[in-house]
Image 1 (cartoon, one colour):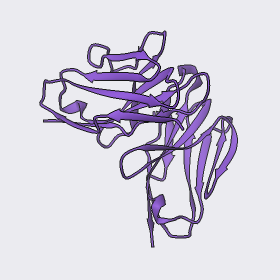
Image 2: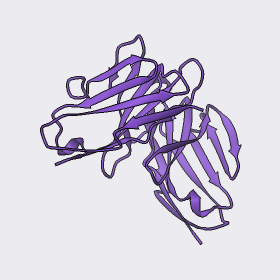
Image 3: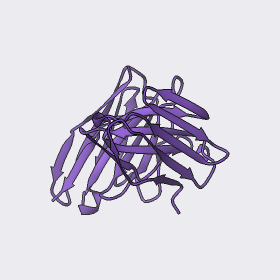
Image 4: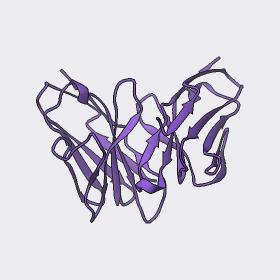
Length: 116
Length: 110
């Protein structure tokens, strides 16, 4: 079946430092990867949508300069939170879909970021 | 305002009983997905609907794009059904962007 592995599960970083999270699709081709964040007391909000062979599209309030994303092939994507501060804490989820095969978006278990 | 309004925010059920969760949309959505967040934090896919209804075991979901709502019915609730349930709708004008509801915390008690 289709699975999405995301790592690390949890990470703690000092304010002003950066951290990278990775997302791997297993059992299908991740032609489209979406990164979401759930901040404390909030629901999930889309950071950016990455489709292979297309430019990565960032949502309002999120920028490539702050959240650079790499989607080099059909099974892997990574996102970095640069210069993290308290407001960046939360659960980061990657959701992947094979555009040509299924409508369902499959999610990883998330990376929980704590900023000290 | 919020495009996806999910209710209730919390729900307590006794084992064996049932209830329904609902998401109302402020605009026409192309499709809806329902997820359950398990104890490990993973989002488990429950349903994907572009229209109509789907049933899987004790769960049944419906989506009416024209009337702008979706429901998730749970019957004969079991302890392991406890968790947070999310609906997420695809706004067709924004590509594959999913807009999440706030979630429903379901507690099933003996």
